[in-house]
Image 1 (cartoon, helix red, strand yellow):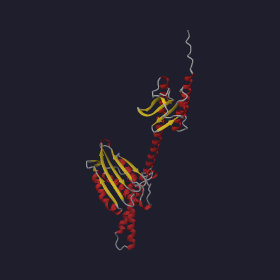
Image 2 (image 1 turned 60 degrees about the horizontal axis):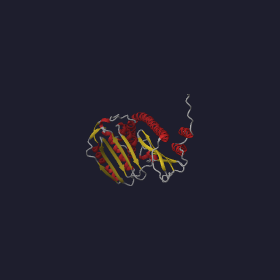
Image 3 (image 1 turned 90 degrees about the vertical axis):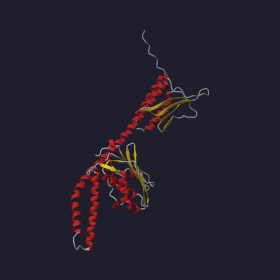
Image 4 (image 1 turned 30 degrees about the vertical axis):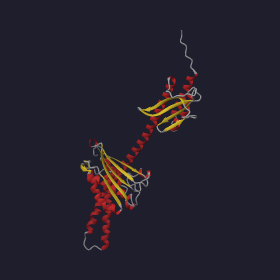
Length: 372
């Protein structure tokens, strides 16, 4: 006897219609993730036989309610967790009105569970895709930034090499002229200005070469605490002149580690100078060293003017500066970043306008450190 086809019931058609509409919502990439999640929340009650049903979708810190949903009046709740890679990220709840005045929470069963599981799975996929797109956008921005800096580095290296020879000639001949006998007083002063300008230009060239990594790190055993104390000693007069108090918070168990002492001195000098300039009315400069889980950290913290987010985004870009033309080249922090990265280390900055800034450098464990 031929098997008769099972007649499709009305609830089956309702579920199919719901799944079709949900798929259309998910595919609509022209609207935001939040708008799609809200549309699914609005659609969910239509898959239930209860006309009083309402739905709630929680995803991380976002909550989406269908019309009529109330936590206080919800009863007979059907729920399903939303998980991504084993981590609980959210929850779906469908609620109706209580029967006989006695409602209770219960997990979905049978067809209801399969349906709500499908919704949870689709939401987890949608959330994963959204986060993947965000990560992709961030990575693309990082690649563009790295490419831009690499090109700037190439230009800087070429410029440094081209200008170095004539600059040395200017400085050399000016110093010879300064030693000549019988120079008029005005000529002697002018030659001294030429020498000072040439020395300043040579310092800019040296920073350019450091930034473009034309001067590779020379690894030695370094005592970071000792380097800090030496730099503080050299910069003490400058700090006193600007009414800046220096606090040294050293971890005496730090020990030694492989690094380039000259380049780390350059890092410390630039960060201290930057901090002092950020406190025109005086303040406190705190230099802190720590060893935690094999990692060595160096923090330079000031109580200065701080930076707004727009400035914070640009501080490591070469030639970017908020100082007056004759007060900075905009290369100091670019050099710091270049040296830190050459030591396989990481530098992070936290700052708030009017509340000072903190530069935190983290050196990786010795077994993972490799100078480049």
